[in-house]
Image (cartoon, rainbow, N blue to C red; front, side):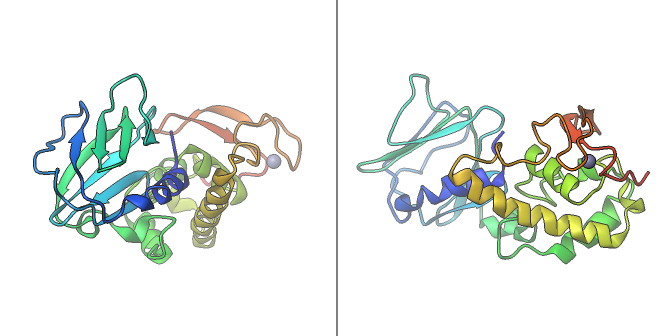
Length: 244
Ligand SMILES: [Zn+2]
């Protein structure tokens, strides 16, 4: 599944479509496409793993899910689930989930929690984690998109390793200083991921994701589905402390 930085990069490739007028909207997806033709696409943004197409009175979010993809001015043999056509160009989404929502994206998404946005507010995230998620395991909490928008499995695993925290640690038992460091690490690594994804080198440069041994002490990593999220998890039992 693409993580936030990948969507952020793809979104930047769509800049040329800003201010263009939609001539037709298509795709087999269930979203209501009536009235889209003739609307000017005012802006294109992203929030976490969502693309956002902004029109005057509404916006459309597109989520690629596990198998989705996007093509510009190209088609696959299979039908697009959502497409936007312009005079001389088009954007096609495959196996993607599009939703039309009235109003402005800022009223729908909390921009304080998107790890790649200038508006990201680490203090807000810290206090929310400590108040509302204290009984949860940190490995699960990092996948909460309302709190860590854009974080996927690679960012989750690499950030926990770099912060020396075991994913099964309960939030309430993790010292505040460690939580602050983890939140900073998620953002910093998110930007590293963003740069690496431009050259497709994210997986080459991970420290433990996709590896078998810890690069520091050469011990075997534990590799199994952990937590309630049931995602494949990599942990060094020596480097990463369990606050249980
Ligand atoms: Zn280690």
